[in-house]
Structures are given as C-alpha cells and as structure tokens.
Amino acid sequence: MFRKNDGQLNFFDQEIFSKMIPQDHPLVKIKNNVDLSFVDQEVACHYSPDTGRPCIPPSVLFRILFLEIWANLSDVQVCRELQYNVLYRWFCDLAWSDPVPDPSTLVVFRRRLGEEGFRRLFDRLVEDLQAKGFIKGKWVLVDGTKLVAHAAAKNTLTLVREGRARLLKALAQKSLEEAKKLSRYAEPLPDREYSSQAELLAAEKEVGRELVAALKQHKEVPALKEELAFYERVLNGEGVGSFADPDARWGFKKKNEPFFGYKVYATATEEGFVTAVKVTPGNEAEAPQLPELVEETSRKGLRPRRLAADKGYDYPNIHEYLQERNIRPYIPERASAKKETGFTYDGEKDCMVCPQGKVSIGKTEHQNGGYIYYFSKKDCQKCPLKQGCLGEGSTHKRVYRNESPLKKVRAKCLKVAMRVRKEIERVFGHAKTWHKMSRARYRGIKRVALQVFLTFMVINAKKAALIG
Image (cartoon, rainbow, N blue to C red; front, side, top):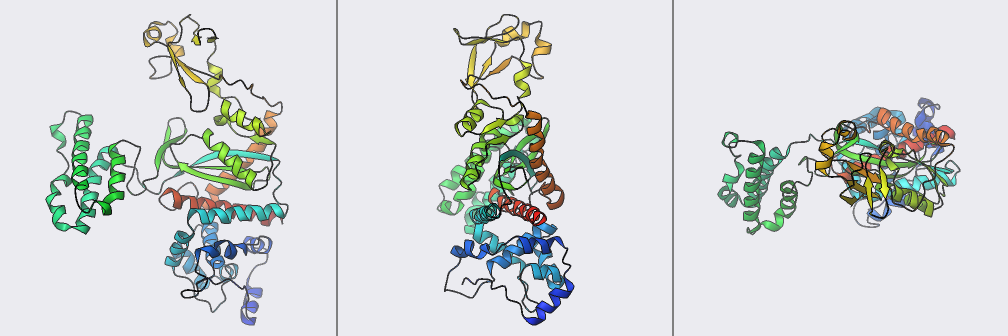
C-alpha cells in the first residue's frame, strides 16, 4: 500500500541532526537546494492505494539509491552505512528509530519502477531545475561514451556449446526424464576431428540446431520459449557475446579499441546540465541517436538554437534534420571526407572518377545519407597508386559522396563551439571518475539504463546545489 513521506522529525531527531551534521557538506547543500519530494507523486501509480501493508515511502528508497551512486556503494553497503551514519540517515529522511530497509527492498523498488519509472524521475528533475532557472539551454551539446558490460564476453564456439548445456538444464527443471533422453547434445564435439576452427564451429552449430528442433517438438516448449529464442540468436550470429548479459554487444569508440558493453548518449546544456539520455548496445552508431535526443530535449520545453557535436555526427541527414528545426550545427567535418583528393564526380554517368581515370562500377546507399561508390578490384590492384590509396586490408577503393541538396553550414566560430562542447565531455568524465560509470553495475540494457539515469540525476543535483 502506498505511503507518502511526511518528512516530520521528532524533537530527539532534530536535536541529534542539528548538532552532528556539517552544514557545509555537499549532501546538505543538495538536500537544501534540490527538491526531490516529487518522487512520491511520480511513482504512486506503481503502488496500490489501499491494499497491502504500508510501504516504505518511495522518496526514501530513491534517496538511498541516490546515495549509492553518490558514494559508489552497493545495496548491502548503503544499508550498512545507514545503520550508523547520521548524515546519510538525515539525507534519506530516516528518523533514528526508523528501521533500515533490507537490501532486497531496493532490488524490488528498482524492478517496480523499471526504466520508464526512472526516466520519468529524471525528466521531472530536469523540468524542476529549468523552472528554477538553473537550465537555460541556448546550446545543446551531444556526445556518447562507452559503458563496459558487467559480464565477460565469450567467443561464438563457447556460446554455442554452453547454450546447449543451458537449454538441457532448463528442460531438466521441467522434465528430468526428457532431459536425459537428449543428454547427448550436451557433450562438445572433439576438436581434433576437425581441420579448422571454422569447420568445428559449423559442426557445433548444426548440433545446436538439431537440439532446438528436438526441443520445439517437446510439450515443454512454451516454458523454454525465451531460452530457445536467445540460443537461436547465437546460432544465427546476431552478435550475442554473453549469456550473463544478452543485450551487451561488441563496439568501438576508437579505432582498433573494441569493447563489450553499451553506449551512453546524452545531451547537455552549456551549463553542464544533462537534459536527455539514451542507452544502446555497443554496436550501434552515434549519428542515428541524435534526432531522438534532440526531440526529447525539445519536449522538456528547451528550445536550443545551436548544437555542438564532434565529427562523428557529420552526416547530410543530420544537417538536414537540424536545419528543418532551425538549429544551427557546429560540427567539424569528418576526416574521411577530406582525404579523398583527386576523385571527381561525373553527374551524367552517376559515377566517381579516380586520379588515374578509372570509373567506379557501382554504389551503395549509406545509412546516414549519401552513397559509397566502389571501384573494380581488378583496376585497383593494377593501379600504381594503390599503396597510398587503399587502406590496410582493402582490395578495392570505396569513396563516400554526399548527394544531399543541402550545403553544410560551416560555423565561423567553430573553435568557440568546440570549447563549449567540452562541457559535455567534462560531464562524462565526472560520471566515470566519481561515480564509476565506466562499467555497468547491472546486467541487461533496461537495468543499465537505471544506473545511467541515476548517475546523471546525481550530477545534475550536485551542479544545482553548487549554483544554488
């Protein structure tokens, strides 16, 4: 049953807190300058109004989770701290006689609210800070960073073998007799009987498909539906890297530096307040995330007229999107567009011509607009300029061309804009250095999103308290 926090303290609590809490502590400034009382109102829909035992007020549980991120504590650690830390009890509105919630209560609270619940709380805090004049939002700064998964990535062969064992274990919980009949599928194939890793992997996948087909004929298949679907993703090579965290993917933030996990995208104002957040698997590109982030910022009532981002967002469809919304982009030109000197476009034949006079033989549409024109492998291998023209491992030349009718706006004060953009880099640096956002606390993209929303709420609250 829902119970709202009344925030009332008795004389004994007031006497203790007034004498033992340092008034210059950052948590005191946050509590005095940032109103979090909206939490009870925003999450009331997740509780029954009149059924069950009275719950711990949601605002109290939220403040405890806030403390976890602020001090880099686990559920168990923060509950232990609340047993004796007077400052923490005061911040969480716990009287000296109030019992400390069990760590499992925090798990249930996170699960109850879910990603959408924490998104609402994040949005509400942004709206409140805007109403108080902290957020002005003349600029929108966009950037992304990596977030390493809280799980070890495994190769495909290991996943294919491990997946069969997991399926049989799940079947054994429903029908031990049927699991024994299919137990032969649990054994890995002998490595020495195959001449290459590719042949071994293909054979293991075939065994996996046989097991899937056998299980689909079984009467227990509805109970195994989720496990079967996930294992089929492994067999189909859809980028799964871990059974522990099925949403994490291999990705790159820098060339030749792969990571396994997620990407966190955010927009911030020039003051350093984060206004919109999105979490994606690590293999998703940066540029397609920008429109959603800008739209989310606009829905909060902010009307920025200038956008600063790095060259990873320099695509024609991004410039067109921003021009339609009367937002001037300050985005450096991508280096790849500058290197293709000597290549010309033939409008009549719709092809590119290289410095040696060879003509491209086809084109493919680029996901961010424009086309990639490619040349013949035969022509490129005979070309005297191939060493300086072809990239490492490339057998033929590919040239990107922007065919957008929109001429990109090149800012005269791009250097100034890039200095402004550094504010969002400072936000990410702060999140990683002080709140350990370089690695996920949880597993699964929805749970990782909770960590990200909480982290940026803590950062926004700290900044507002500093200004206030």
